View 1 (spheres, rainbow, N blue to C red):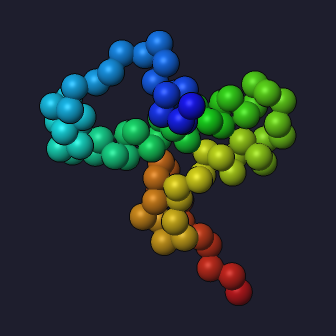
View 2 (tube, rainbow, N blue to C red):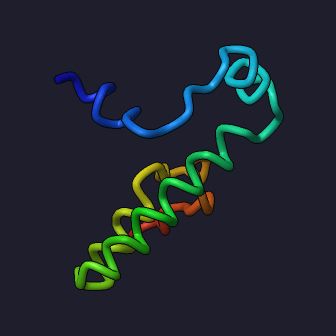
View 3 (cartoon, rainbow, N blue to C red):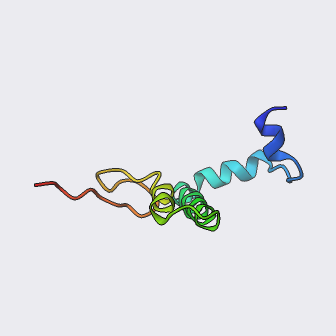
Length: 79
């Protein structure tokens, strides 16, 4: 069985039009990434992982220059 079959089992399928509209929505990508990052961090905490692990999951899509998601974190310059 493929991963798609497992993920989609018991879930309604979404019409392509809905997905296309979502892709065209301003900030939709940022919102979807934020949901994934925050939920993943919350799941890790509930599973008993230490806070640094949950923080790393939450920061998965951050970039050194602040252009990432969900919080736009920026690296601090080292001296």
